[in-house]
Length: 402
Image (cartoon, rainbow, N blue to C red):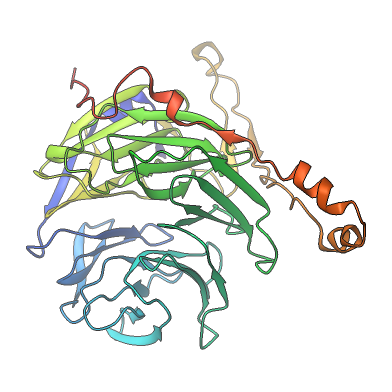
C-alpha cells in the first residue's frame, strides 16, 4: 500500500530526522534510481544515507576537490562529482572501495550540473561555468559529443532518457535526440529575454509532459515539453539573497516543491499553481537543495542540516495498492468506491520530430530559390514569459501559513 498524494497529504509532511555531518552548506542532494540511497555532498564531505533506515552508510572526504555538484550514476554504488580546487575534472567515485575509478577532463572552468541518462549505465552529461556542455561515455577515453554556443547552460533528461534538453541564458531551450546528437536539435523554443532573472535549474516532470525552470528570483515556472508554451508560474516565496534554490516534482507530477528563505518549503499544485502549503522545519537558512524520493513518499531538504520529511504517522490518508511498473490507477467518486478500479498501461510519450531531414536538406540546397524560402520559414515565434507576472511583483514575500 502507498499514500495517494493530494492537498491534505502534502500538508501533513513533518520532519522525521535531522543530520549535520559537516559545517558546510550542502551543494547537492540526489537519490539513487531505486530511491534506497541518498547522496548529500558539500565541499568537505560526501555522505551516503539509507533512505529506509535514515542512517549514514558511509562518508568520503572531499577537501581535496571542493565539488560544486554531485550525482548518482545509474548504479547506486558509483557517484560522479565535480572538482574546483586543483582542476575542473569530473571524477567517478566507487562507494564500495571509496576510490576514484575514472577521471573525465575537458572543462576549463568548474562544472555546475551533472546528470546521468535514465536507463543507461554509461552515459552522463555535464554543464560547466565555461558555458560548455559535454556528453560523456564510461567506455570512451574522452567526451563523445560537445554542445557549443550556449550561455549559462542548464541541462536535463526526459524520464525515458531519449531527449536531452539544454537551455541558453533565458532566451532558448533546445531538445536533442540522444540517438542522433550529430544532427540539429529536434526542437527549439525561443523566449523573450528577461534580464531581471537568471535560470538556475531545468528539469522534466516525471510524466515527461512539462519542464520546470527555477530562477534566482522568488518564482519558478513550467513550460510544455512539446511546444515550449508557458503553462504555469509558482510564486509567493522569499529569496532575498537571489540564490539558486532547488525545486522538485513529486513522483506523480501533481505537485511542485521549492526551497525558500528561513528554512521554509513551499508546495503548489503543478496544474494550476495553487499554493497548497508552507512547511517549516529545522533548516534556518535558505533551503538550497531539495529532492523528492522517486520511489517513496518522502523528501529531503538541506542547508547546513540534512532534513528528512515524511507524512505524519497518525495522519489521515487515501491509500492505494502498489502497482506494477508501467501501470496507473484511476480514482473514481465516492459513490463508485465499490466498483473495480481499472488499471491501464501508461502509453509512451511521443516527442516532436526533427524539423529538417538531412536528405531533404541536401535536395533543397540544390535549388536556386532555397535561400529565400529558408529565410521565410526560419522565423521562430517568440514566447513572452514576462507578461505572466502582472498580478504580483517578483519579490512579493511568502504566502501565509494559514
